[in-house]
Image (cartoon, rainbow, N blue to C red; front, side, top):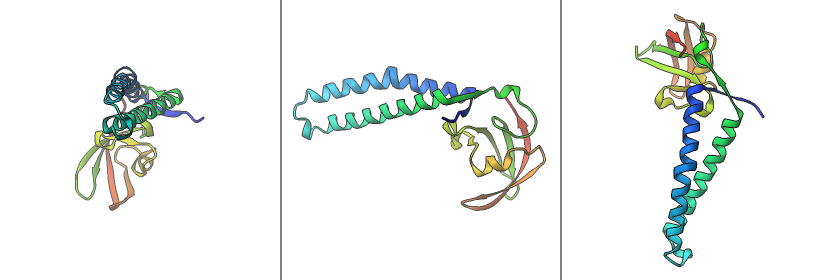
Length: 156
């Protein structure tokens, strides 16, 4: 199986999520299922069916996280420097709107665009890789062609 690149922070966050699912969510849903069973006829027991559905989601997420973490290759981004590569925190300015944005280029498993964590496989991240401060990149997005200038690159 292929290794999954991941920052130390992303790895720690997934470990915390897995720990919470195993120590809090799983026992809580088992209690909910037991309580719902006590209400009698399971064929028309909405609480029971909802709890079983949630249990399936929790167990699926546990398996997914265990798989990701077992294949994770943690990369210490604090030891990196230079042009944009995995783990870089990049400050950009949209050349059309002058809007500034900051993204960290991370692995697929830890990506969250709302928190500025940009999937390394995304068009923007692929365009940024190998570039330096002052370089411009052109990216095709669902909203059309966008141009960004790199203002700063740092590694933490």
